[in-house]
Length: 285
Image (cartoon, rainbow, N blue to C red; front, side, top):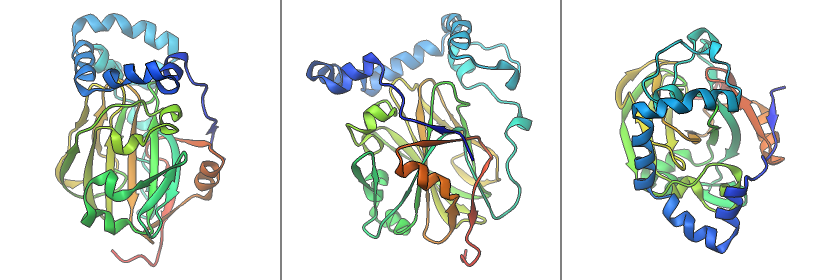
C-alpha cells in the first residue's frame, strides 16, 4: 500500500483569503498573473539565492537526492535535477507510469464528459476549451497529480509517442491546495497549458500543466515531435502546481487504491516513473 495524505490543515493566510469577504477581495489581486510574474522575476535573480538554505532547513529537504549544482537563483534551486537513478521509469510497455512526483486523486469521466472534484463538477471541455478534443475522453480517466513546494518539480512523458504542439489557456492563479479546490473550480480558472500526445501504448492522451499562486512559469521543453518514455517534458518554477493526465476509455486502468482513497477524500503519494496502472490488453491503438 502506498502512503496516503489526509486533507492538510488550512494555513491562516489561506483561511483568510478563501473564507472571509475581505480576504476574497485581496485574493482578486493576489491571484493575477502579473503579480506572479513579478515574484518569478525576483526569484530568477541572484539576490534570491539567500532564500535557499533557509528553505531547505524549513522543509527538511534531503539534498543528497539531487545532483549537486551551484544554483544561480532560487528558481534554479527550486527546479533542481534529481539523481536519475532515484526516479527510474518502469520499462514494461504495458505499465502506466506517473509523469511526476505528487499526490494523486483519480476520477472516472462520465458519459457527459464530467468529473467531480471536492463537490464541484468539471467538464473536459471547460478544462481544454476544445469540444472536439474533449469528446475523445468520454468514459475515460482523469488523473490529478498535485505537487507541493517540496516536491521534485520537473515532469516527464509517461510513455513514448509524438506530441502535436502546446496550447496555453490564460486564467488566474489560485493555490492548488484543497482549501481552494473546495471553494473554486481551480482547474478551469487557473492558467494552464496542455499537450496532445499520440502515445505508443495508451492511445491519444492529454497532459495538462496547471499553474498556481506565485508560480513563476510553466516551462515546457518539448512542444512537438517524437518523445520517449521518461524524457523530461518540462518544469514548474516556484510554487505548488498540478499535472492532469487524461486517458481515453478502455486504454488503461489505475490501481484500485487510487479510486478508493479519492472517494475517502484522501490523496495517494507517488514518485515520478512509478507504475500506477496497466494498459487494458484488448485496447486498440
